[in-house]
Image (tube, rainbow over the protein chains, first blue to last red):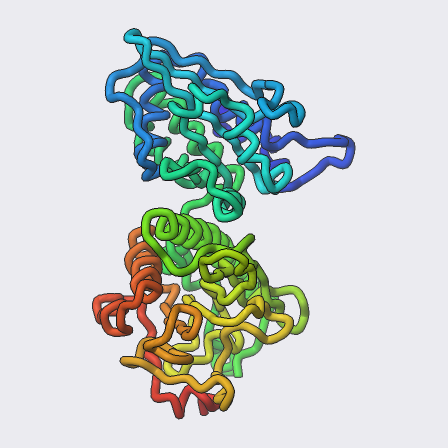
Length: 236
Length: 222
């Protein structure tokens, strides 16, 4: 998918701009984007995957930090499903990343991604943090909300801040692009993945502001004055 | 008067389309910067207010209904304290590309208005609760211009919900993410935390609009 879009072989990504062919009953944009962008992390070296999450966390400005040395193992669970600890039904966040170091240290990243859709209920994020993670995980976890606009995450915090000083980390897709651009200079697999994923996000509408003064515009495109055609007609 | 031809119209639309694409990115980026910086300020410092719910967003239309000329984004704020649920103000921005949102004498170009407004009324275009010029010289809402750079309503020594303000920037001179941080977010936070107009909005801000005398702002430019 990433390669097909980069080489202009498909228009499939137009669906993420809201285009529909009319025959599909349900379009799972969020899940497809999650899988397309973050799925390849599961196939990468532990060191490469660690670099990505390390950069995302550092760029987000949160007080939470990971150790400087890469872990021995990173486990990715997409859409993990658990019974809520308060018996309020099942909870299914988008991604749970478990990082384990050889000395027994563990860290968890609980990730919810949105694509131009509201949260599933006002307490979706609160339930994930309080009733999906167990106490040990919560004490060593960062909850990350990634969306084109982060307002829904900020609203969740203002409604009730259950995350305390560590906070719920609000990250726009544009910030993810900044991280990808940083990493795209690397020579290993993560460099190429970052470059092509950055391109994918641009193609699906996560655009950087370049300034209206930098718009490429050719002055002859828009004639501002009446051409002196009358004069030429007279002399012909 | 110049005569019009089809190619000019199409070329103009192509240009507008490029402008809109940039403005869309500007809007999304600014809405995220407003949300994250206000959220950070409220978590890390003891602010007298907190964000009171979902942001307000609106688009204006021209008479034909085909063109959006302005867009606005605002975060509702209320004072901290138990049982206090009423919205007391909105902090946000308005992007105006044409129409009465840009009619400041000497400017008439794409402008960004950054504001804190008091009261529980939601900013919106339909009911006329947005930035337009000339500014109504209403006895119930008298205003003054501070240091030629800030429109100020209410009591400048009062609490956060007793005063309202607006400053404006030329969008043409906002070209990078650094510009958005230094010329929009930083002055907004300074004003919100009590800085004076000339401290929060120094001459070094290249995009800053200098307002004319109040007398010129309350009447249509000639």
